[in-house]
Image 1 (cartoon, rainbow, N blue to C red):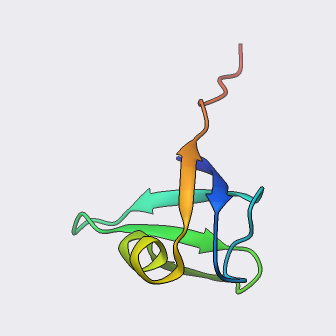
Image 2: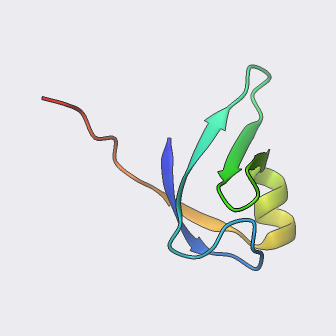
Length: 62
């Protein structure tokens, strides 16, 4: 899912960034960082770096 970052205390993602959160086969969610070019667990982002985000509605081609 696409998300917009609304709070962050890290350069991993910045406020206003639009990125993606995916769910792995084991159920863990990970967030992509264009800055770091890697994924990190959403729980780590939220609990350690204070990252908050809002889900963006999916856009469908018509």
